[in-house]
Image (cartoon, rainbow, N blue to C red; front, top):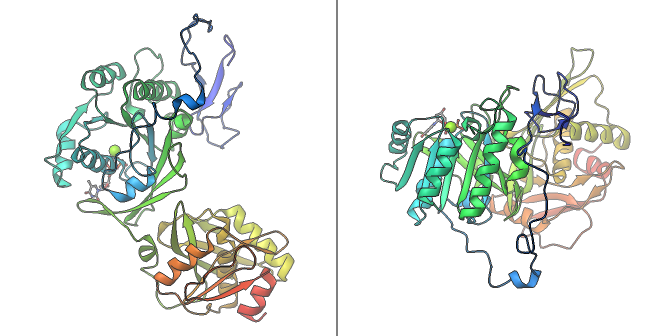
Length: 454
Ligand code: TYD
Ligand code: MG
């Protein structure tokens, strides 16, 4: 931002504008636009002589400054999402809805890393140390060698961290932190950014890995985690559906590992338990094959995960038929409906369409297109797919099926979970079907013809 000219920022999505407005034009949130206060109002940058900020040849960094090894905590679902363990001096943001289990997860992580020899500090701006201790006892972690702090003043926290020099610090939450050199209220974009900035630079300077918790807020007055995503190395979101016991920790950005990796947990009376075989979990409630239900063999990060798409198609009582999705993008659903109509002559006019991914899973892979189409057709025709069959493939606007990545891994997982057949696109590498009856097809129309005889 140019000095002297105020800029505005959306507390929900971090979009900046030069004009205030009641509604964010980027994300649509109401009452979330705040005046943006620059982090530093110091004089313009000037050069500092020859020593500071020298560059070094890339090749020089190789051996001498090779990154120290990561530390795994033993909670393998968490280690996986971190890219194989905690990287020293990294800044990590863990976002999620209030009450989803972020504090629980991080307290368990704190204890696990402490048991692997790291010096761990857990600072809460939301709960008193006694409350955290009670929670730890409930989780069976009463003896963990974790130092607790209840503090919201950023200066005090940095002083504490400076004195303790932990290997790993957890700040719960970044929205409750308060920097006294920033004039706006706690929770504002300026405060949250200042806290994230100071904590991130502490992490780099003192070789401390820092996790910041960020609540996803619906209230525009409190800044959400998205406004600091760009400052940190790794962004994880903890997700789950109300009424479901399981939780998914998803890496949406990771400088030190694959993005889109997921870790699956189950919330129990004694904290979060790891789910090491998510496919079995997501398919656990599946009964006999029924119309509208299709199993998709997906890839989440580095591992295959099977899940079930369920569709319901029924005549609509409304003038405008409903298109509702849970766990799948609504725009992508419209596209598939349009392709079914235009390329296969199967209209959905006058029909309500509901599509759901069972178990609270969210699928973003285009490879699920064919499973979505299959579920829609199966519901519309009231005909179940052949039993024990998994489906995957991307659909293009022309109605062609495009090959997808990791076909072999998808088939292997299906085989492991007891499936005996698969339908996949033609093309790509020849694969070992690992004992499955594999049918490969070129386009959606032949899929419709072969599976539904239409
Ligand atoms: P919490 O970690 O406090 O959520 P967040 O920090 O994301 O706001 O988790 C709160 C919920 O988790 C609360 O509704 C109770 C539930 N819970 C359990 O079911 N079992 C447990 O062992 C614990 C500690 C919490
Ligand atoms: Mg909490």
